[in-house]
Length: 114
Image 1 (cartoon, rainbow, N blue to C red):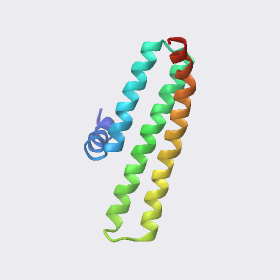
Image 2 (image 1 turned 120 degrees about the horizontal axis):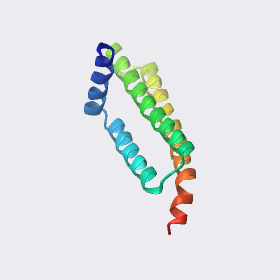
Image 3 (image 1 turned 30 degrees about the horizontal axis):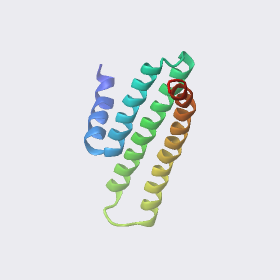
């Protein structure tokens, strides 16, 4: 149980301090509810769960990079900005991929229920 202490503290910290993570978490809940509502297949659940995990993990890593950069310097430095911008880009890339995957999975269900 001690091994779960630090990840749980990290989760509490990121939920309190990072609005983007909270928004991703809310979106994940909505997607899960949509999956239940539409009765998506087992393979679609696997893809959805994996994509949700990736988005949340990338956002957590991005936040960690921001904390480390802020720890190293309080003043503006071009390399610090590049590190933060590049980490943020990784979240954007995975979020676009996740959104595209979500559309591929859910659009047929939505169209079939119109």
